Length: 469
Image (cartoon, rainbow, N blue to C red):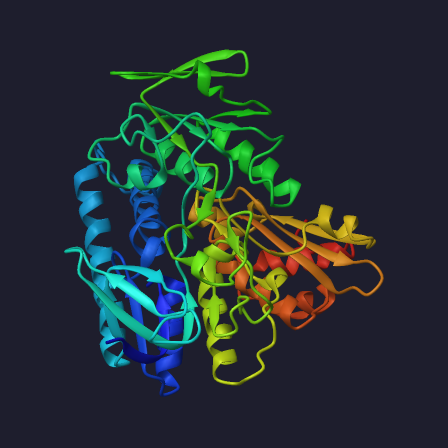
């Protein structure tokens, strides 16, 4: 006999568990199905563990250069085993926190693989969920409303499949017990840049390979140029406009030999970071009217699929593949289930972040996108090296760039590359939400000394009136 719930969520990542909590807060009887661990990719294989190791690498570099601040550290070494233990304990603690939230909300957690069934004796419409646990036993769950939040998995490079020993994805690197001596990172997007930044800080010989003309191709061109300059300054070799030929890639017992453009490169390991693909296989979607195009589930502005009682959120719908986006989509989906009429999510107002060194964060339109939309724009840029706080922090590279509409003065985009960019971006995001102008941002008195002073100077620079430039 199928057990009945008002809302069932498939997937316990940041989209799924947030949706479950939101529904439970409204008094709904809620269940969540998770094949692995609560927290999903973000907690166990993405956001949190990678940032934990990035922090470890940053502390290592800070200790190595502590003498500049009068801190004599002697010989500094990096202990990967302890760094991994720090990461593990951090992840485990946060996982327990999510488990506590499930108990607090009286959300029932089913451990196992979910499969959506078609119409049956249990329901005239598709949506009954079969949950198969690790022993092979199955249990049926009958939801009134179903939310699919199954996330994504690393994309393989055609002809160069992961062997998880020499040809790696980011999940593999997180499990390493020993750092590679050298690595080629194929893909200059967010994941590739973050790993390049981390590994070069840990004294690994890094080559970053990008098929396009620039790193971080979705960011403002000025940001891409600055990131490339600073990565090269730290020792990363960057190769652009080149491809890796799988047929000329040789995996050996002691490394990998690959042809990059006209160069033959020998490295210890290869990391393939060419994006992620929606995790929609083996879900039983064929038993429904749900439409899948280009590998992603098609939804409307309220995240409904073609089955009106089934919703989908997060990476599996192919929007911005970010944890905070999945959470926001989950909230919107539940608000729709509750009978509200939520305002559709504006993806142009969502911050995008890269947590390497330098950090990168942006919200809104790039200068190039704003011009392509037919707008006349004006920009203001202020470099961090003009700020006392940035120099104190020893991170004076980078800048804040504002993109503004020349006719209305409204801010269109905010772009930061430099220290604490991922924290600072919220001020820019709020300015866009409030339809602020650069002049209005420039009127806000910022504390001194502070990194946020760069906003005020960049805002004044839009009209050619910066104070400290």
